[in-house]
Image 1 (cartoon, rainbow, N blue to C red):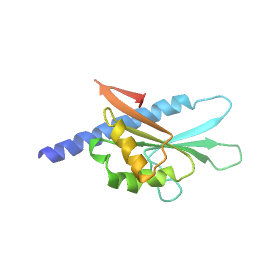
Image 2 (image 1 turned 60 degrees about the horizontal axis):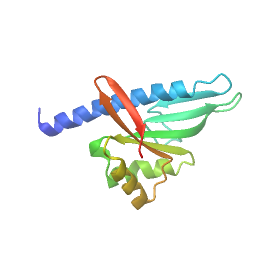
Image 3 (image 1 turned 60 degrees about the vertical axis):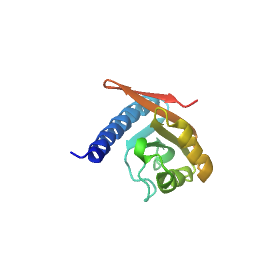
Length: 139
């Protein structure tokens, strides 16, 4: 298998693993007895967008309301084209937008967002040790 194909395949597997882990962590976090939330992975939002993880608040007798968008990136997807195509529209949805990047990429992601005018509620980085995925807040 060519090196580029192998790298893309490994990144796709890493992205999927991090996204699944993030969804589980958010589902646990938003599990409350008094309010109901729906944490969904790769769901079409507002007819146009498909963020990696979306959080909706469910109110009785009403449609779920989008309250958060979470996007996971890999080494090769932290670039100006991706930022303009995905991060910028997500930041303009009127909800909190969270961006997750591989460890060591916080400064570059923050630089891209400042340069393009993308508002991010929180930057976080991820790394794995064995089968475990760890997500931490960028400093």
